[in-house]
Length: 200
View 1 (cartoon, one colour):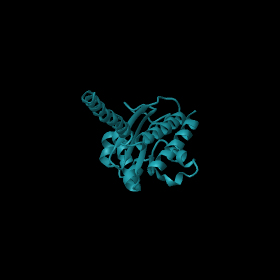
View 2 (cartoon, helix red, strand yellow; view 1 turned 60 degrees about the horizontal axis):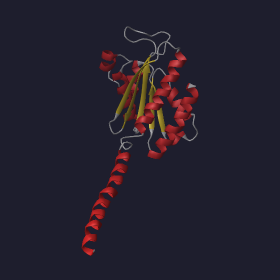
View 3 (cartoon, one colour; view 1 turned 180 degrees about the horizontal axis):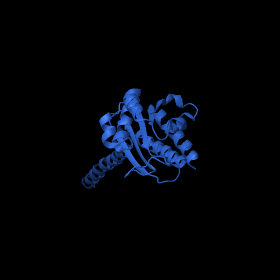
View 4 (cartoon, one colour; view 1 turned 135 degrees about the vertical axis):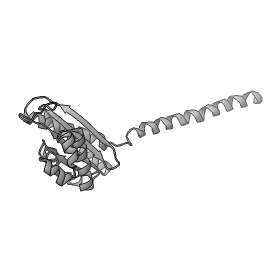
């Protein structure tokens, strides 16, 4: 199910990005490039996908994405702060419109106090400064399942940010256009009623 979900989400995300003329970069740790693979598996994805960073080690996160040593030392590789820094790092390095970052503990080992197997932090950053973070606790469902569910979640978050701040503005415009005719009609009707008595 996760594979088919990822494929369907990838297609709809790519279509949305084409429509909005958005480009994407990925920064992945525990998923090892699976998000980039899911997106580039769709024919014609090259007009949206720019590049993918697989930054498995802390050294790679620092060298390729500019994640600060203090961030990694203070919060750890699997944290909201590191995921957000990875996303903004990919955004800056690639010069794209959207970037997604994933860092987590897929298992079966790697758990630490307060950070169990299945803990994944995801962040999506947009060029306009918007950022979306999500902490997922998938549990010890198996390494492959944690990775697959992380990919699906990343694609959903990318889609959410790709819709952009313009999405909620459309209903408001429609509501305003609906109100204007009503306001315009009411004085006309009252004016017609006032003119009839003198004529009679």
